[in-house]
Each structure stands twice: as structure tokens, then as C-alpha cells.
Image 1 (cartoon, rainbow, N blue to C red):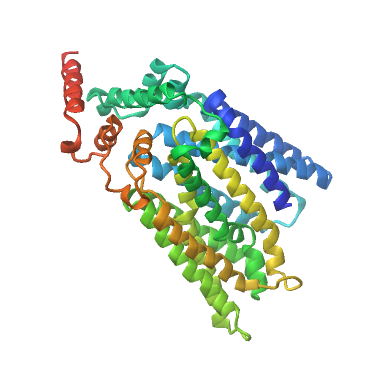
Image 2: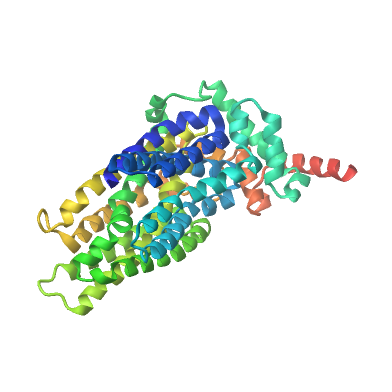
Length: 456
């Protein structure tokens, strides 16, 4: 059932890129919410497994849509200094809602129990639909539709009044427009799928796709879907749902922590050390579980390691995958970069979900807790890849990334590289950075805006 539903998610990831480019984020989100609600209605009213499966597939189509349109929207409307915090929140709310619902519904074994849990899937969609009329469209998407005046209005609504008075909003729009014109003159207004694999875009696509694949290969689905199975296999079946609830609760706390440290410490360091510590606790699960005779201490050590591993995952690599995929693509391919990388995530996740029961089940591979060595090995490979390939985009505007990738510098030099575009000045000023690194031209333009504002 899980594997089949992921096919629906794959369909959502494939169609979301072109859909967002054509309709914008707001209308795509409306379609997403509508699909979710229809899927829930089909599930709740189902009398057969086939009908329930159809509803589940529709819901997963919506999941594929929302996991793309939400991070790209957030990355386009937020200042660089806040982008990571909010894009990373996708891990927080998924863990929080799942934890609350699963904990409460585990107490109800009647038909009403599963129906209530299923119906609650529609609640986020309803809340979002209510808020959509009050939600501004992405200013970058508006620019791509030659609607610059509307883009300015949106920026003035979502930026602090001080930024408007000091002229920073005007400068930010100019930086966006300059990037848009550059893309337009290069024939890159909205490129085809094949452009993902050309020139510097290939590097961006590989970065987004690899980190999405690593999220699955280090065991995220093992943690989220097979936690109770793991607890049962190690002899704690009666406590399986209780430990799963604890797992969700701890993951919520660490997800909040991750939202903060990504924008303070940086993407590379958090993700690198996250992979290292994941490997440690995953291998510890394998070591304790591989003993011929397990003591009570061994079993509790495995459970503690599993919970700590999941907590680290939700704080580091879990949100890092969505953050990176949302910000690494160029403006003309951002939706397609996110869409393609999420599709890779789904395909790899499908393989992991399909094979995990066979790897764990004693009747087949019978790895059981030794599966920790497999995910731990991928975590070590992930750490090496992060060190060599993952760029640091902390406090960088989306437009700055074009300049950074154009230089073709190695990933470990991104952090200290000094960009020279107007977008750099915007990033510095929005994050209250060193004003001496801002160009004289930008400072003079801001001074003119302030003088004009004072006269008015």
C-alpha cells in the first residue's frame, strides 16, 4: 500500500513544475488542496480496498505537489536570512501533526478511529484554502509574467516598513528584474527539462537530486514508516506505538532546533555532522542488534539509538534536502529543479519502502537491526559528498546563486566568496551585515530614496 501510494506522489512531482510555472504558486496550491480534500472524501466513504487505494493515491498526488510548491514559494518570498528557517519547517509540522494524530488514534480500535484519522488529513488543506485569498503571489513569478508593478506591491506588503522607507525594497526588485532580464536575454525565460542537464545547471541538478536521494538512503522512510515494526522485532511490541509517539515528540523538538541552526551555523556544517552522527547511531543499532544474545540493556540501547538517530535526521538531512532543492536552482529552472529532485526522492523512497520489509523479515534477508549498517554506510557516503559537493548558501539571495555557480568554484569556497552583484548588496542589507561591503552605487541610490522619503 505504501509503495503504491508513492506512485501518486511521483505523479504530483512530475506535473508540479510546469503547473507552477504556468499558473503561479497560489493557484497551484488551490489545486493541491482540492486534490487532497477529494482524496480524503473518497477514503472516508470507501467500502472497498480499491476505492480506499484510489483516495490514497490522490492524497499522495497532493503530497507530491505540496512538497514542491511550498518550499519554492517560501524561498521566493522570504529574505535570504529567513529562507532556511521557514523552508525547514516542512519537517516540523509533518512530525508534529503525525505525532498528535497517531498518538490519539492509537487509543481507538473501532471504525470511527481510522475514519477520524483519515478525515483529519483534509484539515491542513481547508486551513490553507481559507488563507489563500490573503496570500500574495511570488514576486519573482510575477516578474516572469511581466507584471513588475504587482511584484513591487507584493514586496511592499511582505517586507518591513523600514525597508520600504530606506529604499531596500526598490533595490531588491531591481536585483530581481536584472536577473530576469539576464535570463530573458540569454533565451532562458522558462527553459525545457533538458536544460537541467546543461552547463552549470547540471551541477545544480546533481546537488538537488543527490541530497534528496541521500535523505531516503539514510533511512528516513525506515524511521517514519517502519518504526513500530522495528520495535516489535527487538521484542518491544507492546510498547511499539508508545515509542513511536516518543520518537515523533523528540523529532518535533529537534526539527525546531534545525530550523534555527541552519541559518546560524550554515547548511554545510549542520548537514555534514548530521550525516556523521546518524552513521554512529545507526551502526550502534546494528552492533547491539547483531549480538547472539541480547540483554535488556542492549534492547533499550537500540531503542534509544533509533530515537536519537531519527531526531538527528529531522534536525539535519531531513530539512536540508528540501532547503537545498528549493534554493539551488536558477530562476528559469527553479520549479523544474525542485520537481526533478523530488521525483528522485520518490523513486529512491519507493525502492527503500519496497525492499525494507524483505530486508528486515526473518523469512527473507532477515537483517533486522543489522539494517542499521546499511543506512549507516550511506550516511558515511553522504558526509563525504556533503564535504565535497554541497555549497554553502546561507544568507545568499536566490539571484546570488547564479553568480556563484557561474564562477565554477568548488563547494567549500562558496561560503567566503565575495559576489559583486546588486543581489549581494540586498543580502547584506537585509541581514544587517557589514555596510562597508555594499557598493557605493547602491548606497547612493538608497540615500536618494531616503531623501525623497523625508520630503514626502
